[in-house]
Length: 250
Image (cartoon, rainbow, N blue to C red; front, side, top):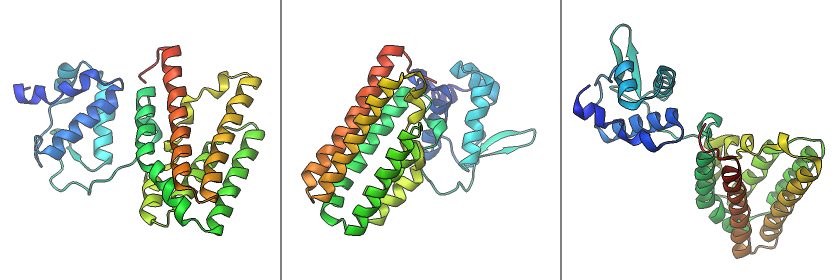
C-alpha cells in the first residue's frame, strides 16, 4: 500500500465502531475525489494491515459500500470505485446505532430537525393534525400498558409533528431515517424492574403530552422548548448509561 493509500484510513483510529468508521472514511474519500471513479481499492489484506481491523470488519464495510452503489467488485481483480455511482442518499438503519456515541449523535441531529418542526407545527396544525397526534399518543400508551417498548408508536407520534408543519420535506426526511431514529435497542428495558419501567414510561408519557399540549395551544416557543427538553432528557439518559456501563462501542 502506498503512503497516500495508507493515509486514507487514519480517520478510523478514534472511531468506536470500526465498521462504520471504515465505511465513513471510504465514503469521504470517494466523495472528495481522493479515491477517483474507476480506481482500485487496496486489497482486504492491505486495509487490515493499515487499520488493524479484522477481515470480517473490512468485508462488512465493503459490502455496505457496494449496497450504496459506491464500489463494484470484479472477480479476481478486487474492488473498484464506481465509475457512475448511484445518487447520494442518506438513511439511518439500526446497524448504524451500534454504540451509545452514535445514538447520541442521532439525538443531536433530531434536535436540529424536530425542535424547529415543533414550532412550525404549533403555528400550522389543523384539527385533523391534532386528532392524528392524539391517536398516536393513545396507541403509545396502549403499547406500554401491554408490556411493549412503544418504539414504533413513539416514531409515529414524532412523525405526526413533522406532518403538521405542512412542509412535506420534513416528513420525507424522517421517513428516510425510519424508526431507527428511536434507538430503543439501547434503552435496556429488559433489565428494568417493574417499578423502574413504570417510572420511565410515565416520564416519557408526560414529556410527549407536554409537546402535544403546546402544539394544540398554538404556542410555538413552548412547543420548541418541550421538544428540546424531551430530546435532551433522552440524551442525558443515554449519557448516564454510557457512564454507568462504560459502553461506548459496538
